[in-house]
Every structure is written in structure tokens, then in C-alpha cells.
Length: 285
Image (cartoon, rainbow, N blue to C red):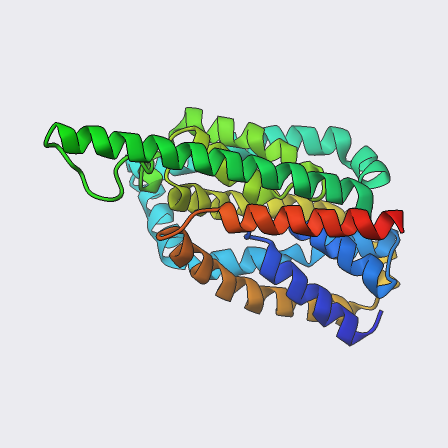
């Protein structure tokens, strides 16, 4: 590996980690396109997630500091958020420990990634259209009864205070599906949050915060288990990948949240389907 390749992979990680398009899937595809594959690259792709983790810490620094102080004061909102993160992380932690080796051996390739991209894209579009239809029906009913609540009626619950322990655990179960490369942790958790009744933007915010323990644990575990293999790539290249992914992810988080407050996930679903179809075409050539 050279610094340019490390920077390119860092850009891919930063752009795709929090968008519902699968960072791992894109990194696998990018690695194959650049001619860089193998255990060392697979581990590199996981370790540079640390940059994206740091981006969330910086973006939500005020919220995290406020909630940390609230824990000392035993405030309900703070303890509920902590419990939600624990319950959301637990299913993936167990599944990851049990399935990590099999997943890396069987699913880290263009074929499985393409399947996950297409299936996930279709699921996103269907769920988004169903939610939009229900929201429209509720608005019409509210208007007919003279109780209109504005354009956002029926769009889901807004605010992290609505992430109850039950909703968090269900989102955590959904996150387990993201261990299949190409499915996207962001997509699985956002869609799971939507299905529990949260607004898309609130589901995305909790998804970002849930990434702190999930991606953090995966990064630390992979860095420890693969430290010798990572050494083959050069410490400087790992640092470059981390720094680039941090800068890019920080910009993407703010832009994505602003986008979700006005629009839905359908364009990302269409992109996933097109990309998956392209990969299939290239594989059968």
C-alpha cells in the first residue's frame, strides 16, 4: 500500500460510513478495483473506521458532554440514552463474536456485496414508499377532521427521547443484519428505527450514536487481532486512512442530517440497486 491508496480508501470510508450505502461494501469493491485485496486490506478497512467514530464524537460533543453530566445527576434522559445504546449494541456484540471469522471468510467479496446492495436498496424504497403513503393518509384524515398538524404529521417521532429501551433493542437486532458486507449498518439501523415509529432523522441520529460502541468495539478488536498483518501496510498509511476518513465523515454527518429533515431514502435505494447491478454485470463478463 502507498499513501495515495490509503487516502482514497479513507475517502471511501468517510463518505459511506454514515450513508445507507455500506462502507464495508464500498471498501471491498474499491479494494478489488485498485488491486488491493487480502486479510491486511480487510483489517485496514475496519480499523480506519476509527476516523468515522471520532467524527461522531466531535459532531455530538455538546450532546455527549451534556448527557455525561446528566448521568452524574441521574437525569432520566441521560440514563435512558445510555441504556438505549447498551441494548442497541448488545445483539451485534454477541453475533459479532460468534460469526466474525465466518463472515470474513465467506462474505468479503464482490458477489455477496452486490446481493446485499440490491436487496437493501429494494427494502429501503418499499419501506419509504409505504411510510409516505401512510403519512399522506393521516394528513388527509387530520385535514378532514380539522385537526391538521402540518407537513410532518405521520412522519415519525422526532427526538432522541423517543428512543425507548424496547425500540433500541429492536434497532440492535436490525443492526445484526449489517454484518453482511453491503447491507450497511446505517441502513439497517435507520430502517429499523423507522419501523419502530421514529422519524428518519431521529433514527439516523441514534444510528450515528450507536456507531460509537459498535464501530469502536469492532475497531479495537480488529486492531488487536490483526496488528501483525496491519504492520505489513505501514503505520503511516493507517494514520492517513484514519485522518482522511475523520475529515470526510465529519462533513458527511452534518450534510446527511440536513438532507433527511427534508427528503427520504429513496435516492440511496436507487443508487444501491444500480451499483449492485453494475457489480453483477462486471462479475459475469
